[in-house]
Length: 230
Image (cartoon, rainbow, N blue to C red):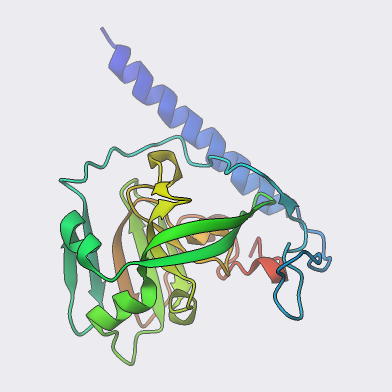
């Protein structure tokens, strides 16, 4: 008796410790170097491929808040709403029926690791915008996830040509611990901006800082500018 309650309490305590550690990193401005991006093969003209303060890893680390939502494909829904001409709700079949794109990009995490050449498959954000029709006053995009996570990006970042709502990674479905069945991928920003387990995308006129942004992390999150913390 009480085993379930003890487990929930333990998960809650672990989450609190993880959040406290990340908030402490923000206060201490950890990993900031003030340096320049390091030259790597395939770098963008005028800047290195590896942003300042980052180290290259060979495997994709798992980072979360200790909560792994169980999202069955039969129950999965993606709502796209806010300042759009055609608010939309997609189930899994309808999502896969949208135009599918393949994008290769790098991942840069605020905890200082970078992973090169990830191959994503999913729906390009520009195709999402073409379907729902953002209104002229829409300037920001807000993400909400199945675990309660939120984050925010400017519309211009969401609309970048390599941004995608991904369901595949390196030829396989994205594993649940990495945000499957569908996660946001915006390669030009630190990866906390690429919400896992996305369930709602809202176009808005006003910005709305998300989970980490109100806990000391930068509102924009450009890795080449080292925008780790606010």
